[in-house]
Image (cartoon, rainbow, N blue to C red; front, side, top):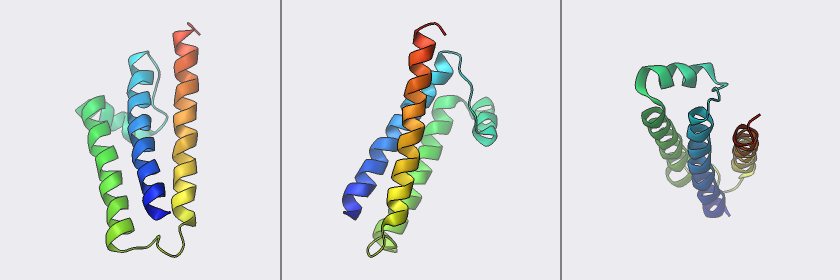
Length: 101
């Protein structure tokens, strides 16, 4: 189960990064002030690559080295649901942007 949840998180991180880049490309704004600052300083693609990579390395370490999710994987489910919500919201914004609204 942990491997499935981690794999889902990888997919969600990729989708979050891609949809965020698309939203910004079509004139949207980043709601996270820290990311907005990093986007201005280092560029959107570089920031997303580093941040998403760091999230996955950190979560991978906790998952496969420290095994913190082996017995109790509720937090991994919560993280997956949280990022799924972000991805859904990004797709909604993209749909509105492409419709001209």
